[in-house]
Length: 468
Image 1 (cartoon, helix red, strand yellow):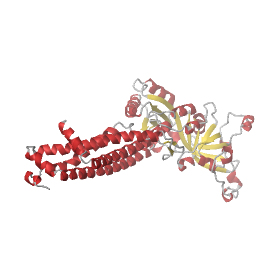
Image 2 (image 1 turned 90 degrees about the vertical axis):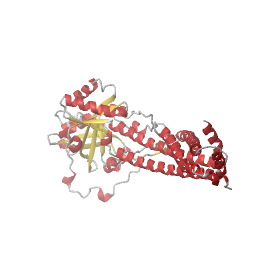
Image 3 (image 1 turned 90 degrees about the horizontal axis):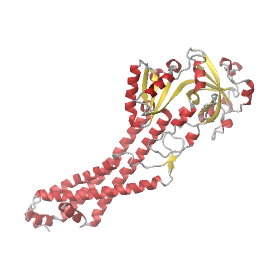
Image 4 (image 1 turned 180 degrees about the vertical axis):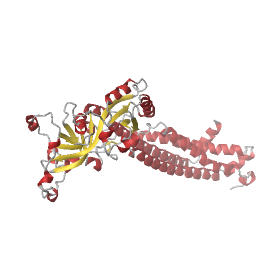
């Protein structure tokens, strides 16, 4: 303690230089904390968004993940309700699984034959109430916009309704009916007026009989699309979809092809009057940290019951998640190294100047019997004190700045988002960020003071005493 007390007094013999050194360490700490909190906001925000849309895990029939896009109907899961009941009954899973819901992914052609336009689409069938419940998952208490949640305007009772992407609405000339903003009018030369009559014929004659009678159908004023897809048996089938609204997807390629609907309508399109199946079962957990445990237990359950199923987590379903984490981790490491180098050379400069100013003092205390190890410990202690003060002030400043930013009302649009979200700096969500940065700066300060301390300890007593 005496060594630390003397070190504290020594560093403020030149208070201006010491304060600038402490300020440099503090600024480095603030930079690392704020950027680390910003990175954490992006990573946990992306994770929350992907888990809301895709769940933590998805269960497929074996082969669907690699080959199902070519023929999803063939890879359908039959008796999926029994599989969900089996999972719910498992004592190891029922406490970590929040909810499960079936989904049906497929591809087809959508036609708006009142305006002689059609387009290929990517279809998603789900149970609206369960999908809306999935989007309420917020394990990390992230601030978020409720706009996307409120855009789910499908109801379990309205099995004929659907939502399409804004790009899909533009290409099918539904901008006016659906009130899509910034929707350019299709050029006259591209409206298909010069096509032969047979090319304009619709495919409604292929459809299964609808439940709506002609009077009900005429009374429904919503835009109507005819959806064509191949059934599991290979025959074409058509159903009618009434569009409730549009939902921009954030990625143009998806937005130009997206069609979502009630799962019963998707099943009727893909399986006709045959056995109704799904292409996946979405499993959403209470906490992401249980994902590995749930994955292992599900596989054991499937093997025990000889079920031909496979499991994929959201990081495989959305590979961009890991890519973004890798990029941000590299960027964070680069900034941390730059800040560390600034601290390193600042401490070395400060301690070297302190040694040069105290040559005669070093010679005097060495002549009084203090060994070289004592000199070494004294200057290292001064570097330790500088590091502790700078890192501690940096943590306090980071907390104040993060609180100010989080409550400033600033918003931004993250990658692949369509709505503005609050800008937040999450410096405490990662339990290693603050203590790791504090400890790293202190150790770096101690390491930086070793070279000047060794130089001071190696001074010859006679030369030091006659130094002017």
